[in-house]
Length: 126
Image 1 (cartoon, rainbow, N blue to C red):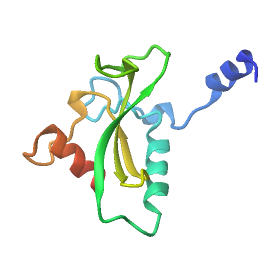
Image 2 (cartoon, rainbow, N blue to C red):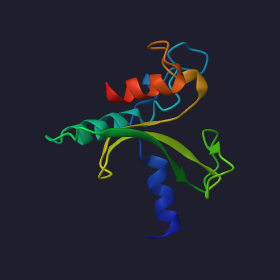
Image 3 (cartoon, rainbow, N blue to C red):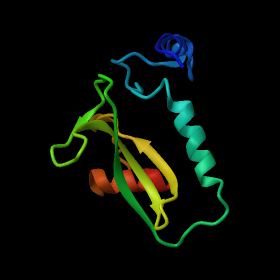
């Protein structure tokens, strides 16, 4: 596929309406609003597996990219220093049951007094 064709597809593909996107100053602003339907749909598909392992773990994954984006994180001890950070609930075999994309410190839910990591685990296991 040519670069021009990829750029044309990127310019017209949308997963959510722009009218449903709250502005930056709004209290319900979601940085991932444009791709939120894709994330929700994938999480529903991942959970639709009928058998759950009894032992699950939560881990962070880094998805490297060369694209310039304000949500990329810098971690000096990783092989790919600049990447998108994902939080994933997986089985021991490596199957992902749920995932979330880290967008900022402000987007962390205050579900309980378990701290940022505890709240992330609770949100992914809901």
